[in-house]
Image 1 (cartoon, rainbow over the protein chains, first blue to last red):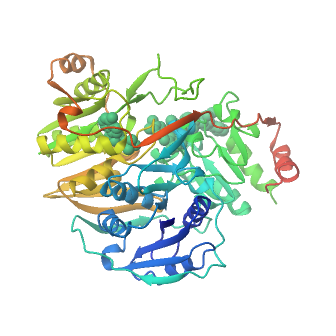
Image 2: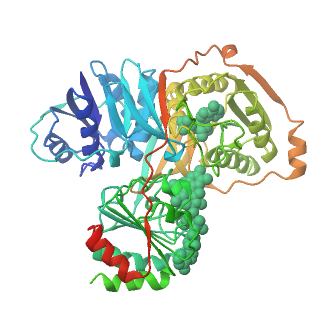
Image 3: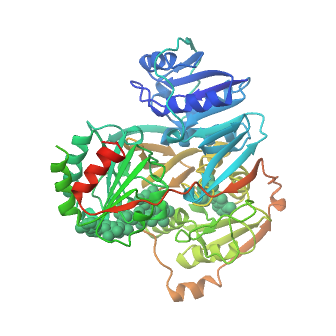
Length: 310
Length: 249
Ligand SMILES: Cc1cc2nc3c(=O)[nH]c(=O)nc-3n(C[C@H](O)[C@H](O)[C@H](O)COP(=O)(O)OP(=O)(O)OC[C@H]3O[C@@H](n4cnc5c(N)ncnc54)[C@H](O)[C@@H]3O)c2cc1C
Ligand SMILES: Nc1ncnc2c1ncn2[C@@H]1O[C@H](COP(=O)(O)O)[C@@H](O)[C@H]1O
């Protein structure tokens, strides 16, 4: 059995979620190969080759592969699929964009967002915003699988010594072209892999009030997240959204501030180890999942928290 | 140009789903059903495009049991012109949905297909990408902004790092995200009018598509419950608990 993993990266850096996908692949068993499809992404290939458990890195380097264009990358993976039992990717926006296209080109059903490997063909995955967990068996000739990174430990980033081999990048489909990105830049840790996350909701009232959360985050080395309501209201950018349709996080500590705890929000954070809720409404559903609940006005509690962290 | 909008009937997003006692699935009997919220956004975007003169017909299509006609009527009440119901006796997987939609596309020849990014029941996030693949079309996924410029669509995508702008060649499949628009409510007169709008019905077999499932769901269970927590009386106690009891800071 061999498994091909599509690396998530931005040509310069390998995304951490790739490491968790390697762990899921290790649990399935077999030779693990990583495909780095990109443009001048040599550093990423080196990083992939160093991951413990990876035996081969395949690099496809071409201008047409520079921005994760699904119409160009999916046929490339399709052309490489023969001989692999599993094609995997992290369930990041890149993996979610590309892998279903690969699956359909191969005429197989994908298993999305797995949280557990039971055997080489049987997986667990959340459905209904995580309110139910389905055990799914795939009898497809090749299993196309995306992996929820928070459900698997990260593989060691060092210790491997995979060979690196170049493959042809394929042609431009001519269907889509990249224009530009507007990426949020932050000195703080990345939301989905941060050990501590502090999120604000509609109760924050205004984007400028997120500065209060940022101060706490800086003291804790935490990432800042948000509910959909806070993103919709324009308090913070879309990439802060935690939930069923945003990012899934499972840090050691999750602090929900002014968030009511709708099912769709819980779907993205209820596997956190410790959950704290600060909300002025003692009936708020967030308290049902909180290990430590503080019924208080956030505009008093958050600044006090910041001071008491010294 | 025609816009095709696939709309799925799902458990209403406000309902707390319950797993069946025999672990075969979730309880669907006597549960409030509604149009998948992302599909409402897709219908809305198609209607706005039509109202702005960029499209001349909006066709809603749903795959599933007879009750899915209600979901199509909802789309018609919002303003869609016509509906197509593809009768299927069981839950149809995204790959088969994509194949059925491909047949509908072959008949209707739309310039755009607006698909929801994700169905909130199966949480698959696959159908739009699969449809684009088997049509050989461009795909713009997780889209929060669209502008039609001649034969290309300029789309803004919500990605993990922020936003990404792409130009996709039309015809194209676009999967819509939450922030694309706020869908309208259907007014009572429009609900009445929708009853008279054309709604074609056919079976999956009529379209020559094999819809047999490829995946087997062997068990559905409740997620592990979290242990009940406590309320702390003030910030001081909270910090103390986090430091000394939970040891997370
Ligand atoms: C298809 C779909 C997908 C969705 N996906 C997501 C998702 O991925 N993520 C997500 O988060 N949501 C998602 N939602 C939205 C979700 O249903 C809720 O609407 C949303 O999570 C509510 O956000 P909120 O808790 O910030 O706001 P609200 O529900 O309005 O809660 C605000 C809370 O702040 C508290 N508060 C107000 N002022 C103060 C104060 N001064 N001090 C302390 N507390 C205060 C209030 O008591 C209240 O509990 C989705 C919805 C749909 C339909
Ligand atoms: N049975 C169906 N009928 C109509 N549209 C569907 C159906 N299943 C999926 N779709 C469309 O595909 C989108 C994504 O679904 P999924 O890939 O299951 O998450 C939905 O938002 C709908 O637009």
